[in-house]
Amino acid sequence: MAVILMTGASGSIGRMLRQRLGQHELRLTDVRAGEGVEALDVTDAAAVDRACRGVDAVVHLGGISGEGPFEEVLAVNVRGTERILQAAHHNGVPRVVLASSNHAVGLYERSDAGPDGLPDDVPPRPDSYYGWSKAAMEALGRLYHDRHGLHVVCLRIGSCAERPADPRDLSVWLSPDDVARLVEASLTATGWRLVWGVSANTRRWWSTAGGRAIGYVPRDDAEEWAAEVGEPDPAAPEHRLVGGTMPTGPLGAA
Ligand SMILES: NC(=O)c1ccc[n+]([C@@H]2O[C@H](COP(=O)([O-])OP(=O)(O)OC[C@H]3O[C@@H](n4cnc5c(N)ncnc54)[C@H](O)[C@@H]3O)[C@@H](O)[C@H]2O)c1
Image (cartoon, rainbow, N blue to C red; front, side):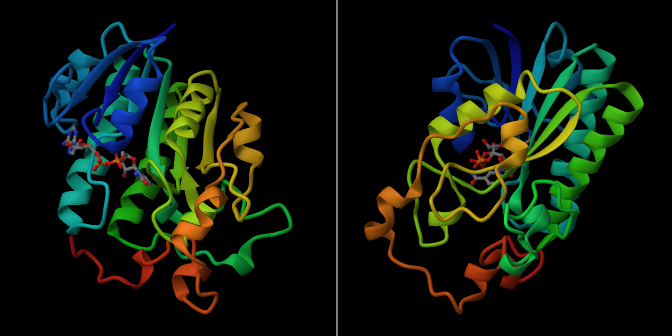
């Protein structure tokens, strides 16, 4: 059992994890306080520092979770993550799990994937300001690992939802139970790591190596919903690109 500070706990993934990480002592926080969730704005350095006292790990989910104006993603996602890492270091918290995103590398294509799939640690190739902010978060995590020895796992999450919503999700879906398995594995991982956050989807084309290396064993498969969501159009850019439709949307538009 560990004492875990969770940011963004009122959000979609936060709600999934709250139900599934019950064996730990969870300190739930979000800029939107709610039942069992305390108010914490990750851009407030002093408040983040206080929240990190006596904690074993931070699961950092809080932030802007889609495309937005550059100044906003910079302020919340990048500066907010710096506050988290700084406070973790200052308070001797050994481990931070960062919610990165496939959009940090959204402009890679299927043709970039080798026989074992697209590696977990392909260099950043953001598809949006949002994706750029996630790449910056990953780099900040590396800085704090290299300079201060923090263990930092950056999860390049695909599409995390109760069930697959569209044909792309047949490849990139991350189920609620699997995101809990992934975070659980990340809570014992060492070093600085980039790991895809995807389920055991039959049509997955992103590597399983990074997950295997930290003991993440996904069990769910989007294929169960294939008839419901329909077949992808192989000629569509969203089928070809890691980032789906994000790379073709307007830059900076919320
Ligand atoms: N759901 C996915 O498929 C997916 C995919 C890739 C990456 N991610 C990342 O995972 C994380 C969680 O995603 P989600 O789907 O739960 O998103 P969400 O938008 O449902 O939740 C994000 C939460 O962060 C909170 N937040 C916003 N600004 C904050 C601030 N300044 N301080 C503290 N909290 C703040 C929001 O109130 C919200 O509750 C996000 O960082 C997102 O970018 C999610």
